[in-house]
Length: 304
Image (cartoon, rainbow, N blue to C red):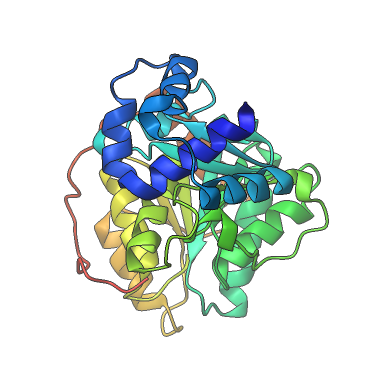
């Protein structure tokens, strides 16, 4: 029965897309997942087609779980996205990590050694404060953040790839897969496009209680994530880079737009990261309403 439900969900997701599937699931109340799945697999659904059944078997064999917006495991931070909340999540790894408290470590795909070190230090500090490190799946800062978390004792990481779960390939090294949870909101077989990167950024921003920009330039997907973080009221921190260095100008712009520069990140990371984790604690206690970004200094059409 579980396999049949998964096949029907995959079929519906691929056929209807996010918006129509969300509307269909919206006919039911939170906690009524069993009733919804019973109807989905009934005569009215037409039954899962062979392709969806094959995909469901492959995902099941790989250990992937399907979580709908009606399930208790679905994170409240995503429900707060309302119309933008993904109706279905494909989860590889410990589902409990979905509702863990997290700090995001984000930045450019082309960092300097300074940026990679800052990302690792921030990730290690997040782990020490009992936070999961959340980020995307890309080279550069994302990779350093995940690896920094997993190199720390007891570190855990939550990965949001800009791709469907059946096309996920980790860019970072890890020796213990049990400490990694991968979450995709995209239907299996979806073509990778710019939209997927932007959607992934929304989930990273929504999940974390605070974010650290290790290093970024004046264009790119990191700035899209920063705009979303500020709009959601999440505190954003960034490395204070020396004047004249490659990404110093972008970090000055980040500070003008509302990010807090951590001047001691490289020399006294414990002190700098304490400020970041304290801000995350305040976010957890007082979840802010979504508000417009007051300092929108970046273009809408940045390429991730």
